[in-house]
Image 1 (cartoon, rainbow, N blue to C red):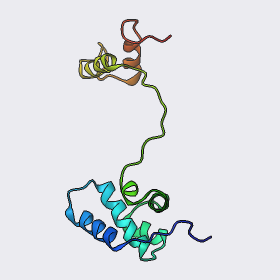
Image 2: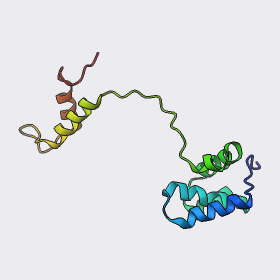
Image 3: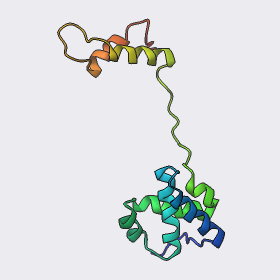
Image 4: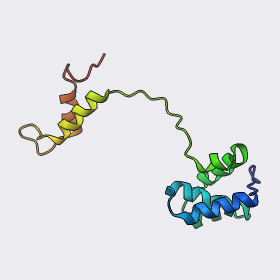
Length: 130
């Protein structure tokens, strides 16, 4: 099956990616994505890029697609999370859990286990289970 998304970099995009890669002051993720695009433009296969850069083929496919559909800036930027989870604790409860974890464990225990922490946090003044 052939590639669906072909990377075709313009000269200004190639210069921008070269500058980004050689600057050394960007996040590793962004630099890795910047390394993927020129190799894809040169006709490298996703498998060959994956082996050369130690990046998954799925990531390479996603970067190709994002570049073609949304542009170079979006391909280099972190993607927004799709999670729709709700925090189970508020800031005060999280602070209490952290303080509890750093405190001495109950008598007869060497450390706080997840079960001991859960039992302590379920007390009515910390976590409401309703």
